[in-house]
Length: 361
Ligand code: CUA
Image (cartoon, rainbow, N blue to C red; front, side, top):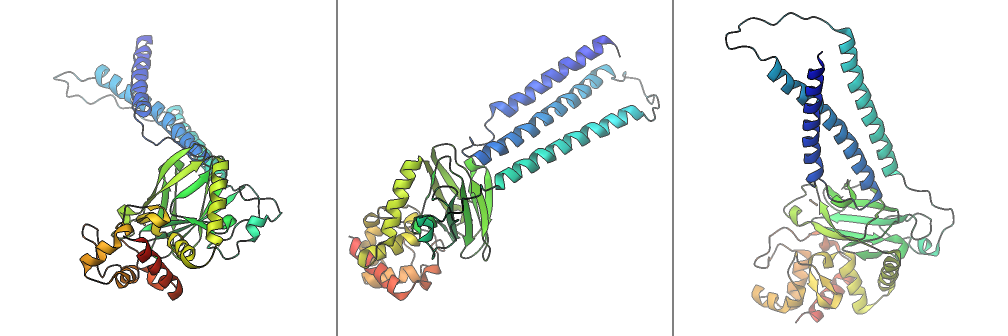
């Protein structure tokens, strides 16, 4: 091969490599990672992308070089010279891709294993863990932060997050302490849903009858979307929540006070607990509960809504809970409110109706 040809090939390769690298680097293809696991996934992404760019540059350079240098003349109808077999070339083009694919498999396998790894907890059972036998999922016997277990309950079309180590405190948004390994234990009350926070880099299905798990170590403060990424029914597109990553102190302060509230019993506070435990605050606004959801109707305006529906207030509220599709507030889609609340114990339902009727204007 002439020296000029090699120089041409190298220049072409650099041009194509730079072009592909610019496309990869200048366009934000992935959200900024906000967890250790997402950092690792990002590493695999860039590892594979770098290999792809190198191969693309090589192939594109050879094609463009060949198009210009071996172009047939206008009247040239002849076949090219016959070539057959080149053992060393065949060894190279088999061995190099094999080595690259093996490297990608090894890197991916290591990252997958690391991302599923949950640091083992110490044997001592903390008081927080002991006080929580009745939760949706079992806490690990450990200090309350390492690793933190959060039960994630999915249902059409809402997320509910419960913290067994904090007296089963519940929340409609997922609050997490930074730099703490968290194990999410996912379950579904009806159909298959899928939990996804793009910034955490992973998805996990919530399947009825199964307890699926996901390990997350958030490492960036902020608020990120929680998205259902499995088509689960009419309200699928609305099945969104938020996750807030905050400092450990802020998280502990919130979780402890939330857990205390959950432990208090009787009257309005029991109804308030029912309201939060069932994720009502994820979708509705209701001032007495500090709820600011906007997916469903504003519960501060129930009196007005009952008048529109032409029903007595308490009867209207009860019907809206146990048979949500009997009357749909104007402007809201049918079939979005879960129908599972008809199974609430009568006592809880009565208290909830009274609570909602008392709080609305
Ligand atoms: Cu739940 Cu889509």
